[in-house]
Image (cartoon, rainbow, N blue to C red; front, side, top):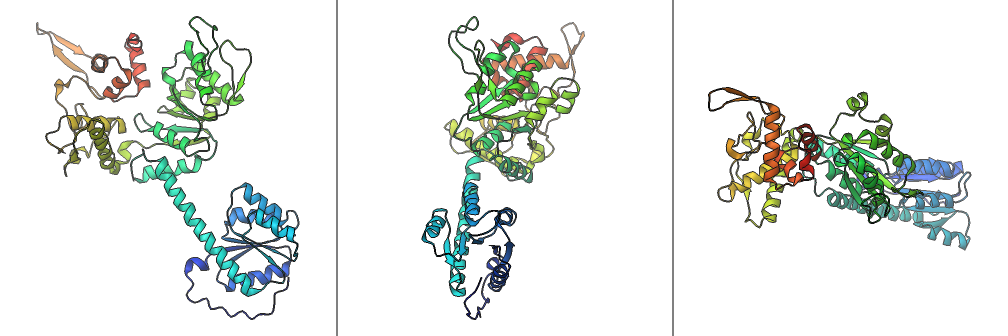
Length: 491
């Protein structure tokens, strides 16, 4: 390639550091052209990267993310047009300056249609090239700012329900950002009450499936005899009581996301059926002969130790590996204590708004008595504590946040409240009857009584019962079975 003999005496003084670090990818199969253009780019204060053919150019784009590309049309392996098509297919918006010896008008038109920033012909004018490159770099910088702004707005929109600024939360959000635009199955691990479903919804809302349905399934509540109908659907008349066609959860999630909450508590017989649905991406309604293809993404969540469950043959290892293509760990509240005031203020505002109460505030020492409290119920327990404190407040200021109803908690509630927050920490007590005889009051009896009292206080609503007890619905279901209270499920 020949450059017009024009002396280049540009003064680089005054250019900012960001401009000097701009990367320019030079793709040309001619060694002389690459050398001259590299020298020119360096004199302008930019960093040159070279490619000798179209395939190397594409690799350079992916590896270096250049700010501008100087692209020759006629190259081996892939020509300039093929490189542009690749960029268009992958939504790469880097400005491209096409360079060629041809003055062919159809070539110019084709370049413009493919989105080229400018079309220059050889021999090149240094003055013209410098002007075009500066304009292209300005556009590149503007595009970068626009992309950054879009990312910030998208992040604010997707994570608006996740409150916190701790490093633990930032790491979890960063991991969500990495995986949400893929179609990988995600397994969310975390203790009960940490907000796993909020993160599952964020992954869905940030994905290409965001316009599709988000179907949440409580796996622990699915009984074995109803699993086929609930998960895969049934046709009218397939069994007694099937008065209409029913679309199962997997079919409801077609072109969207299915969230399998408490997947670790799923019955082993059901696990095999779910595994097949994940492998084949096909389901068959009960009573139907043909299969239906469904397009869904799976996000699952559990608070169980899968390694132990697999070892004890309580969970299928092959299903586990299908679910955990990407693992997301949600930190417990005790590992993000700096977020507690933020979350508390959020819940207080939410409570006041929903109950049409005047503005409520926390006093300056409201959180001091919680320094050693471990928050076994995590964010769910914190929300309960906020609501109790708001209800029992005097005036508009909450001077002390009261957390926990347990002996040994950071703040004990009066014993006549009747309902305990957590079942697992109640010590064995002794009581005396009217004759003075000692009666052992066991942990199990404490738990059973607490569940019954919470159930009555919640007017038979199991979700509210679990919330009052500070446990998940899956744990509540297990406790009902354990204490012979199964009748409350249908009560």
